[in-house]
Length: 402
Image: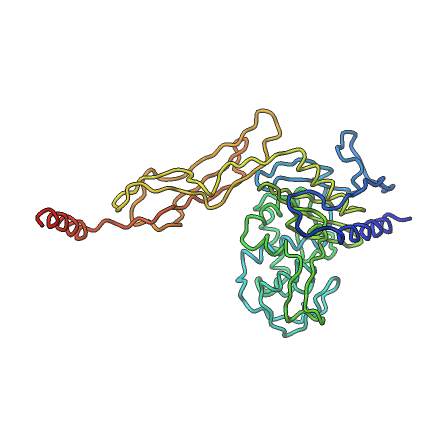
């Protein structure tokens, strides 16, 4: 039996098992018991003698802590490979950063009839950008990527250049995009490591997680009687704590999957490229990741990070909070430790509004900034007024006389 046929059988077994699970389970671990299967004979697959997960069927794989970018496990993670529809992770990132999610997008002739996975979009349809992004990520609509690219950049080619520029800015230097959907092209490639970096960046953006973790959603424009989109990423059902992100398949790329999962605030990302059993591989990778590192909360958002003086205001000191919690994996190499570099004035000038961004904290590992968080004012402070001060003094005098 071929590896692809075996993969289909494994997927069917997983689907049946997942359907029997209670919906109330929480945490980050496999929701189904995955029996470790003997790895089939995969021509050209190279397994290092010290590979901690020798039964993985992926040619390239990686598990990364999203916050610190630490690699917990890797197999041939720097090899250039075709990403198939996992490309759409970067399409989503560029759309979130460059587009207005409330814009109405007019579907053009180039989008209608795009080959491969489709939402059956029709030329002239007007659909909100935010909704097209759901269609692109949940149902892997290649036609949606063309509509999005043309709306934001004028053409797919121009949009792909934005994608590549952003990838290189993030640090994904071995990545090049020529389209927005991952249809095969020899000049369209990435690596497992780069995809993990790109996805880690994605989780820092508003709405990214909300879109990629949605299991089902309804839109009137969906061209079937249910008007429903169902996420093709079965890991959202298979793995407790899973919160994204994207499947992919072409004959050249093989089966590809990028998965995100969170436990105790720790966000891990697993990538498998050209895998036979991509669900099993991804579960094994996440289990390995969560069992080999523990979450460390460096900065909490529910307690003051520090306090700072305010000049010229009716309050002299206010608390300062982090805009969000920072939880990372413990450093895995001896001698490593996280450092916090705070950029915050010793004194703020009134007026100050609660929620104002007043500074920043950089988190460093081995001297390199791995993530940052804004510092925000915990209280409002009105500016002192000369006339109010005189009024207050007079009122106190009158109280003394009367």
